[in-house]
Image (cartoon, rainbow, N blue to C red):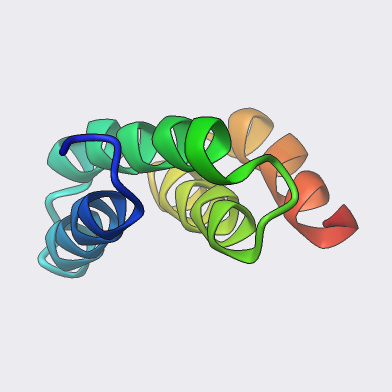
Amino acid sequence: GEAHPSTLGSVNNLAILLKNQGKLAEAEPLYRRALAGREAQLGEAHPDTLASVNNLAILLKNQGKLAEAEPLYRRALAG
């Protein structure tokens, strides 16, 4: 299903692919979907959730959205 951890992993992987292709605007909603799903299914402190937090922070940084990226980096660092 859409909320299964394996599905969320695939969503995250597609977001990574799009980011690597320079399709940052297409990747962002997928990163957000993966993060929201992982928070709901795995919890805020799960390593996969924290990886999604970091991935979204990297994307936001690459988009020049530094003020949005900073709290996510801090959250990922704090674990």
